[in-house]
Image 1 (cartoon, rainbow, N blue to C red):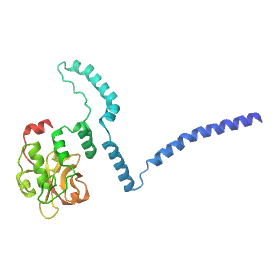
Image 2 (cartoon, rainbow, N blue to C red):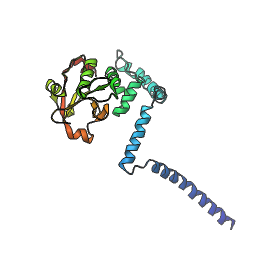
Image 3 (tube, rainbow, N blue to C red):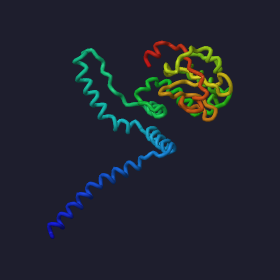
Image 4 (cartoon, one colour):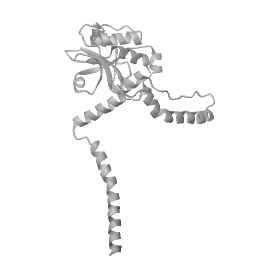
Length: 240
């Protein structure tokens, strides 16, 4: 009888220990379940907020070990292959790189044109005003004009139609940072924005002012006319 009782106790303990990880795993999966598009949007919003709140100190804490290991590997391996090689060490991104990496959903270190980010950030959130050219209100073509003047030292024409005629047509698949995107929002060539990266562009929108949007957003996808490129200094594109 005692032997039967002990055997039953062992079986019970075994079943309990086997079921606990399953229960924990199920609980974890349920917390992350995405059942509707609204759930997916909410999760994406939480991720973006978390990334936006990622300070330099927390970024350093999380990547420093990896960065040091990477640098040590370079120091050991590169001189063997090429004693004159310059070491490309990782750097901690700036706050503005972290901010726009979050907006563009890309890695911070891929954002190398800090001047462009600074100029965009200076205008970011400025409300839209048709014909406006100042911080109290600006329209789409004036915003693009201000960015090109400040970053590339190029004077663009005033209107979207004139900018369209000035630029050279390119395929959407060839888009680079700084290319112009044109849309038909009120008839003909009536809206312009500047491409950044990862299908995202910055522009002065009528409803939200200066903001970063996605080319795949239904409103812009339905009104997209094409992309064009202003011939800037070739050394800019070579360096970026």
